[in-house]
Length: 171
Image (cartoon, rainbow, N blue to C red; front, side, top):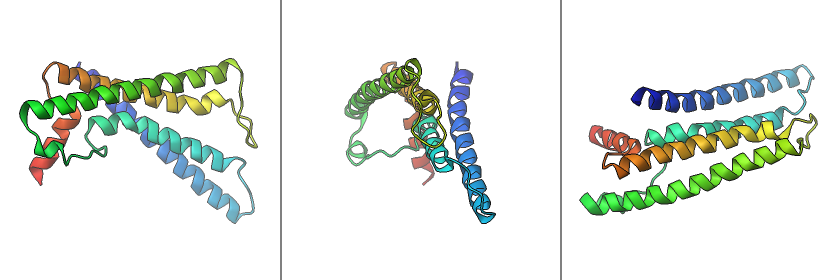
């Protein structure tokens, strides 16, 4: 099970990193092409879509590794059962919000597929292809929060807290 989790979070990282590299290469190609008087059609659009994919694919890995932004002013003053209760409340709220996000981004991509929507850019790209990375990234994020929620329910330390504590002990 731990190996499966490791591959899941690593795949989130790799997908995000791949999109970032492709976006960078596309921008560099556009800069080079302009130097020679050539324009790559819709390169700005593809760069924006790749940026969105980079962000959404990276959510699960970032959350699990404790590298997301958390305001811990209150949490640092709590300990024991009260801190676990607040963390559990936060995970519950995150679970609901990420579930809502995952459902509606997937539903939006599905509707775009059913209605054969295309982008309104120079190159007509099926809209569901543009929306799919956001939907998948949202589902990955929901799974990551569910994983932490279940760990908290079982009385274990969620992955993001373990990573935060490991980082805090080295400072």
